[in-house]
Image: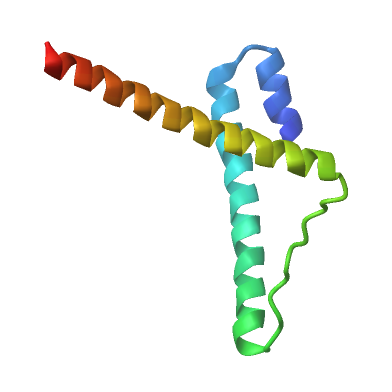
Length: 95
């Protein structure tokens, strides 16, 4: 079963035949990724290979500043909502 078979079945709108093709292809990809991860972990454990560290590319400082600003705004909004909720409760208690 190949991707071409899957595409042919989908274009013919034969979804009942396409589904097993899709599952087989997806399972094959998951199995391959799992096997690769097992090999990597075994190499780290038994061969002393170092774990691969991913590096972030933070060349665009504007994006970082924008994210920080958005997070700060979100925190302020949550605080404002809590204050408004507290004020509403106080008004309800007074009545």
